[in-house]
Image (cartoon, rainbow, N blue to C red; front, top):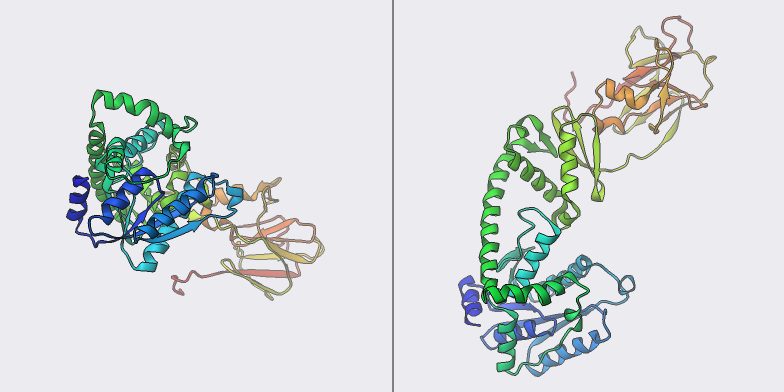
Length: 442
């Protein structure tokens, strides 16, 4: 294991480390190697309680540490969704625990026993499932993880190398029988594909390591270029489409990927090529929006693409008497008289409508009998015609009477019930738009 030790030495890391140890040959090999080369190891073991032997494995690791004067930290997952959870959920629980251990001892380095064969399996699985340039990569020899360093020193060796080390040093370990079940894709690759590759070239894992590092260097360069462009064209969750459309198609794709990663981080796997294609379809159309996982909405407003969490506006319906003020909208108030004819004032005859008046949020399918127009028109269509940005449409209410007839969309359209022209009215209501915090009074 000289190459692993040389690699750790070159990293110039502190010798206080936390090791993720399952009790299998890989992690027991690494535990032995670290302990016998002067590292102060905290052994961290997670019992997922998924197999009947899980408790035995927990005890095995705990007792080994006790016998070899190694600090042991264990976690048992109890009754988590009836012991049924996804691979991602299991991984999150493990790594949350590892971080807790790192914090407890004030250590900065987490070490895992991923080896060269694991790297081949990971890359092949990602190619089979399909991904992007970054997603086709396997795992790195070392990488930043939260505020810690995650190191995989066995990446230079194969499973066969590890088994030889374990045998030569008489190291005990436990065996997970599920590793031999062809029910799982990874196992089928391990048992059926890897032997064929190794038959072609015994050190094929080193070729995959070279391939992985080439992808990493390429991705690092692309990320640098994309971030330089992004700083200029993406601000306050808004993408300037005029500048965006001047970019090369490949860079455009990477820009969208980068924006999405800023929202999703570790959940980026929720985003597929289909989602990204929908965004590009949206860029080529107007007045549409798409809903992405975890309540992210993307919508277009003329030459801008907006990314926004879908925080549903609270539905309300308030009785209007003489005065009413609504957050993000403004205020309505009865006034004595005015000559103003704009859509910010409406004059009503109480005999034509049924009191009381109310102000409520927009509903799907809402229609209004627009003044000087035969028939009705959908409120949503009016918003489009009036070029009302999608980002503010949910903040605009309507004034109705007690029969739910829409009388007015304040500041936008009046209904046929406006009586300004005939002069017979007894109710005058004025709308004052709420000023944005960055707007100055004129």
